[in-house]
Length: 63
Image 1 (cartoon, helix red, strand yellow):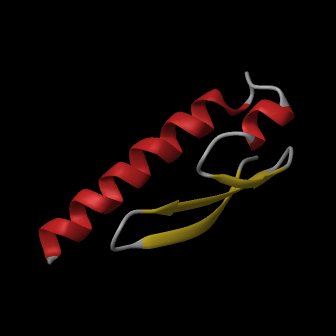
Image 2 (spheres, rainbow, N blue to C red):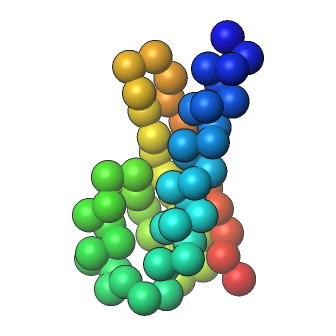
């Protein structure tokens, strides 16, 4: 169970890092089309990730 959660959070963390790195270089509408992005603004991203067994929703603030 612990290994499964670790792997799951690693996937999410990697994807979040990629989204945040790309954030300033993507136009707003393209960003919203990303499968993990629920909402986006100039200062925050709300992400949703789900697999067959887990889901996570998290808001990240970018300053």
